[in-house]
Image (cartoon, rainbow, N blue to C red; front, side):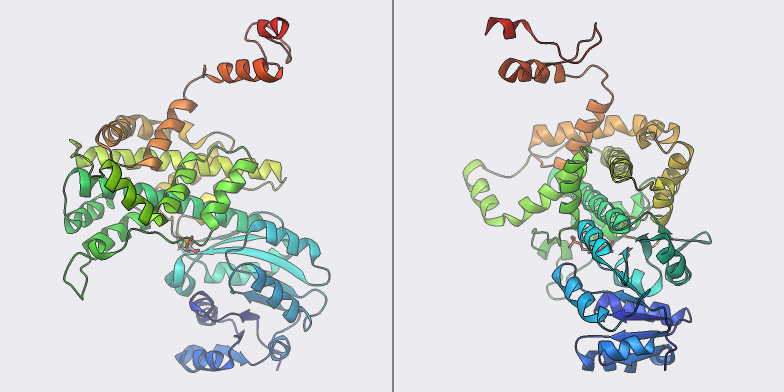
Length: 466
Ligand code: 6PG
């Protein structure tokens, strides 16, 4: 029975929802999970969609259930498991068949796998939107051989989220390009979440607001420039009540954030690319510091921790978030541009912004304007676009007030203050690296360029003096 359009390995939350999504769009999906009972239970609970699902007990069954040339989506944990499953599965695949890794792989692993692939083609797709997205329309960032995209495009665009009739699935370049874009998405996700958390902290500790009231503020902001999935869910999270205690849910959640690694990879890769993503870096560091809960307790016992009230308005905090968001996305798209050049990927930045408009965790109204700005001037920093420059100019005084207040009154706001530091650096033609160059030349004769002459290897008077 070789009539499945596609195979899928890994029936965890994301895999099973993706399989149901494909089945609902009319594709026949052969599914396999390491535990056969889970595969059988999944198909048994699929209702009407079970007609489009074929439960397979072995990789051999899976391979024989799919039409050739076969495509098999892997939704298994990133890392060694992908290599193991790929190797075991490949033994049953043939020339021209394709493995599509839909997990949150490190793009370097995807590059390696694509390089090692011989008869089997390898494609890496970033899938965003959590369980709900996987089931009803995720945002899909694809990478691999162009022929692989051509083959997968009908399925991936059919299952993807839809923005005004445009599917949120696109192809961004060879090998690990799709997983790279997903990592940057997650870096931005970390940064967006962190600046929201900092705004929450200012309202809670600086303005003395209760969680429920903060929830209402986020809900209101979700109707303005900050309209986005993350603003919306932050409102819902803040407004929720713990059914066990009746307390605000936020007040009973431990302030220690988990992380699976994608945000960290973004910060690491940014360093390789010399891409200034200071807001993302601050967000990753903040997650790391959140884990140091005992040390923070010792710090509070020693130095005193309670920050002072702030005299900020909610409008100022909202403005700070608007500015922070523009600056963070400016950094993210700049990183993508640098990667595209460094890896010769020729990545279409406007198409990336378009794919992020719906389905993914960072979806927001602003992304549509970002797509327009990047389409008009793909090589320009996003914050230099007329619309965003105006929005930034209007909201910058608020970011400055919030940063100042945080610093003066002892509220940690590392990502928002990083955004301001980036802005002030990037709008300053004459910076201070002349001092760095002087120091480098002093201790290492590294040479410097001069403002008043051509040439690259000048030295200071200290050279001849030493
Ligand atoms: C998405 C998310 C998702 C991510 C989780 C958890 O786009 O749907 O980015 O892929 O895995 O949000 O990530 P962390 O554990 O690193 O916070």
